[in-house]
Image 1 (tube, rainbow, N blue to C red):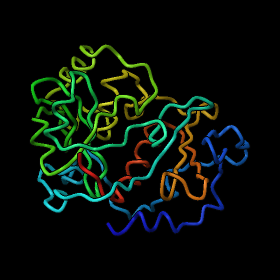
Image 2: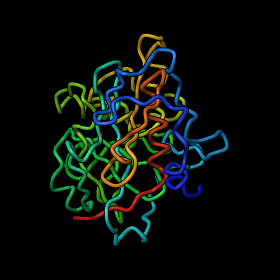
Image 3: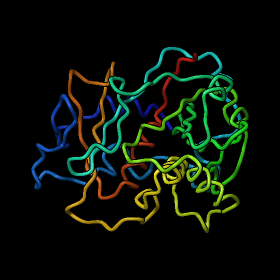
Length: 265
């Protein structure tokens, strides 16, 4: 797949609309400047990375032994908006970015929690924690149940309940949403990746489904990518514009798949 992170940090962003450099608020964007951001970082020949199925591309159930002794954390940070409302935040200033071994993570999880498992050169894998070491997740085109300690072996992860800013459903309903889709395969699944499925289970919003919302000029999504050490690039960030939440998630996951090095606790 190549060193995507190096390519990203060396791109010229002169063509991209940029909001408030300190907050990521896109309110300063003029309408005529808005552009769909799906193709800004990656061209069509790039390898698709998701969990929706086909060829096993994306999250792998096989541990990567090179990740058993991780180094310092180095991750891109994001903030996302729908119109003027912040709907997603992955910023050190307001999120706990610490990652843990699967065994430690298991002791922290409660039913209905969203769990993010991180791997080098892959998009993060999301799952819904059920109980007793069991998680429900979308993996290679199937909604399935596995042990957290098995899918997290040799990897590190964290609980990401507050990553999205939507009002969550009660924990029992989150688990019910996930369990009610166990066994579904590609032809019956309306989510394109594990994150969209897990987030739908917790928040119940149709926007997480493929084709779940009507595209309109009035409703657009703004994704600010924070580059450089500490989540910024000289105090600046760059904003991309998308027509749907699904498009924004898919592109952000492609960027995440550039790879990162993680610190265990």
